[in-house]
Image (cartoon, rainbow, N blue to C red; front, side, top):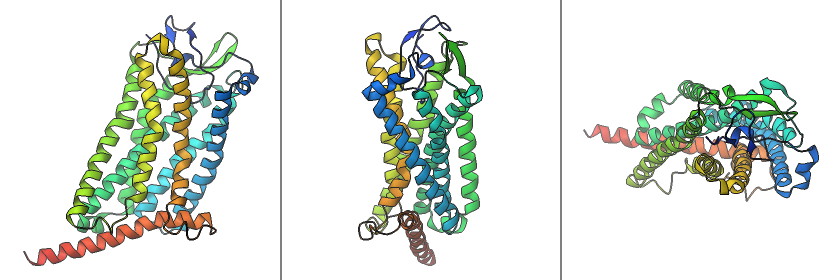
Length: 351
């Protein structure tokens, strides 16, 4: 069968007959078999390389700033806990990008078996943990809107940490296959960090579909349900114009959706494509890979640009902008909960 896995750390994709599998392979045989300098002579490869370097630099810097602000500079709250965890996930992902960047310009993998498995594991861990955290954040806002009195009394940092730990555990469990089936193999004198699905012809298809279902479809269905409930509730209570605690979350969710949609689309095409689409799938996976990685540096950029005072105070510190963006949502949520709680309390006195 044709293998159809997504490989983050390869830019020069090639289809060839595998010495480890008698069928034509894609995901597990995506690797270099050319001199180091070839990437620098290919426009697409060079552009993707530059983009990944930018993602690494901005991702490490931006998420590091968010971690400092949400973890140390701001008062601890449920909202800062959500954003801190999301920033940590993106920071870990970006910290592994140098291995993939170096691999993209070298003829073989030089970092050993452990790092081959670990970098693949971390990248899918980031994918799952990010979307699971967005689901939890959406559900948190939905509960706050539907049950403001309960939320004000029971919405604690401890419960938030518990949910975060649960999300990370589930994400790690779903990312284990990317580590188990990752291996360093020597092919034509070149060490390759690649996926090997030779034990069962349906293993790769199962893993790819499970990532799509649990890492994309189901989470977004849950998010849509939460936001539908939120919008209906706000409209019913005539608070649509005055309530803004969901602004940043909405943009974060849309950004994740747009960044990961190309990846999932081409993974599914790769599973069932015909041979005449090889080049299209190859380029699609390469571009989808880079777009997906870009999501990890966009979040802190959004924090900085979505503060209410960004345009008025453009020359002020970037730290204050991010702190304002994160804190703004928490302050608005607190005002909403207080207002809703008082309304509910007055209503209960008439019963």
